[in-house]
Length: 259
Picture 1 (cartoon, rainbow, N blue to C red):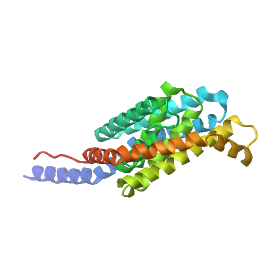
Picture 2 (cartoon, rainbow, N blue to C red):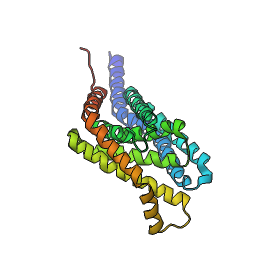
Picture 3 (cartoon, rainbow, N blue to C red):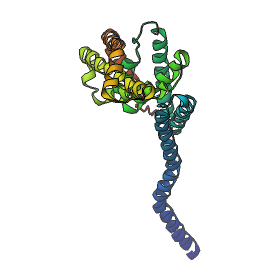
């Protein structure tokens, strides 16, 4: 009778020890999985920052686009690696980015008018800053395959991505039609001014306030067309788009448990 009792005693001790060590093992396993993800995300962010910097030199357009492609690939891999819910979110973002890009190409005949800003702001307000930035950046990158890639692409990606982040800062306010239209009007002017900075840095040797004001004044009619187009699109379909994205966002974060 002693042998079974000893066996039971050692078995229980081993079980207790393994159970006590299990959270530690899970912690280190999680850290091992997160380290490559963090490194890849850092590499993608660095590549995108380098692309923005390289875009200031017109002779480096190929390098800047290559860095942008690597950054998108790195972020996509990190997003997919997070699990099936992240894959669904990435699919939604890809759909929104492609739709915004198609709208931009469709309205290309009207200078400055396109739905990218409104869709990016709505995505940021409904799905969060990360998704909003991704929609804006992806829309710029995809649409430029039809409208022309160049050193302006990384700056457009950064500018429209920032519009998505701005939308995530005031999600409750942007449920109102007038507030959304006013917000998109301001962001239209801000985005255009941001692109004027790239134009000023990339194409002008003399970087003075006088030359920047001249660049901005030359593009002001197109800037106003962009801002007014944002108002029209936001008044026509902004809140409806926001409610649609809200429903999709809730589905992404709803877990169904079958009893």
